[in-house]
Length: 99
Image 1 (cartoon, rainbow, N blue to C red):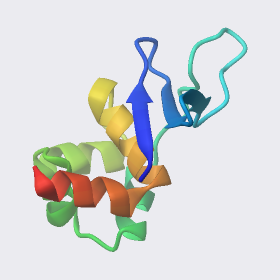
Image 2: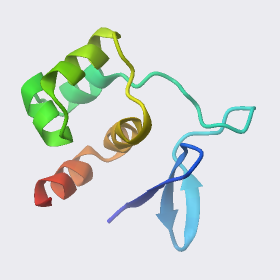
Image 3: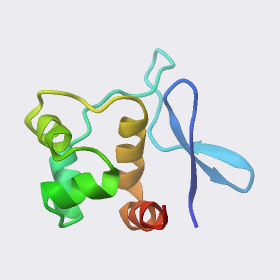
């Protein structure tokens, strides 16, 4: 089972053997990379419709549409969740289904 932690500065790290390992390299400024998350690609890799993906992630379908069309960008906890989904979708969806 993989364990992840969202750090106060926005970085996501994987916890292994009591140590933290960044999921993405830090930018030169010391802040986490802010590369756009391709929500459409994540959803398609999971083979889900917009409605199914929205239900699994716990946001309105309009939010998914806005992210995919570039009208809005995921921020904060949503961005962190999507980053973790990109690395371990089956684990995340299984954990969310238990909630």
